[in-house]
Length: 188
Image 1: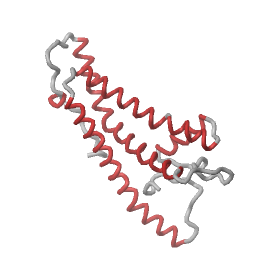
Image 2: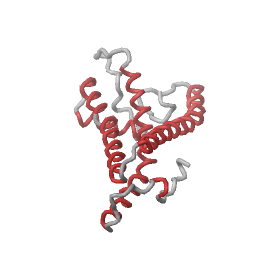
Image 3: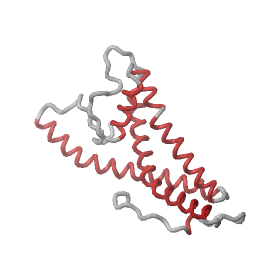
Image 4: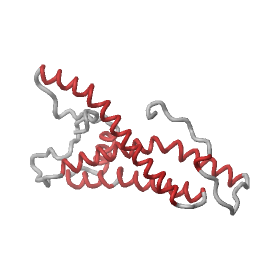
């Protein structure tokens, strides 16, 4: 469902040929999935940068806007789906959050899996929606990991400007001219 990254223990190949296929599929699928999620996160980051450049706001507003957007997006990815899964699956709220964390951290133990209870009648697209949530959630986490250092850098620069009395009523410095944190070798 996600290129082999999230592994649930409820499905496994039972033949030797199936196990060999699974290993080769994972060797190809996992790196392709990492590249895909990296490109998806880069696309989201580029879109956010385009929106940020359009708005002629002071640096403080840019930092607050970016922080608020990332916070609201994170809440939408990490709060709403676990609540929905808890309701549909009959899990407690803590079980829904546990499932969300285990899934989006790509651990996937298999102790909680959506859409597999034979006593429940699920809507036909339920598992597809869960798969879409996993894909978007992983892309969002990649976006957070790539934008997090930049946001922390901007917050610290803003703090130094405010604390040092360097903020004026004039135009904000161009964020592109500020020194950027080093890229991690993983997302390079």
